[in-house]
Length: 214
Image: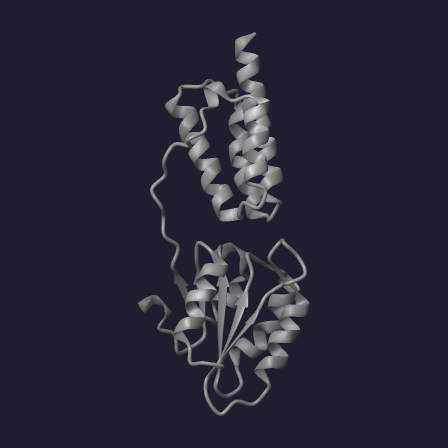
């Protein structure tokens, strides 16, 4: 990918962190990259422990360019602050690549030190295949069981497609019910469990349909 022609420290704002890192590593010289992310949590949050690991790795001498890839959907403030000095004055041959899904997850002081590349691609939104007008608890349970390990990106796309479906089927929702869609997106951005967010939203839709029949 031409977007990954990287020879200096960069911030990459992308749709999916894991996919991006896999593709990015393929473009780098063999054995010259080190990926640092939070392996202890499914929240994908970059903490002070990861920051310390990155700094330690940066000060291991290298005779050729070494790429340190820092990954996180969100970055803890104290972790970012601890990186400021090494990002501003990186050791010789060290290139930092920050990979995240949201520019807003980074402090202005970080963005001012490292050039940012916005690589997110907006996909064409389509209505969900779920028939909301016929949605019941049995169908909801089956869907949730099938998608227990859905990713945050896929969950956000599903929420948006469900909103399109509501409009397509001209289903009347209250203000509170409409807000449940934007609330779902916000919760996903805050790294709530995707399956939990979808469960709440789909049960809200089932309740709405049941209410409209009464």
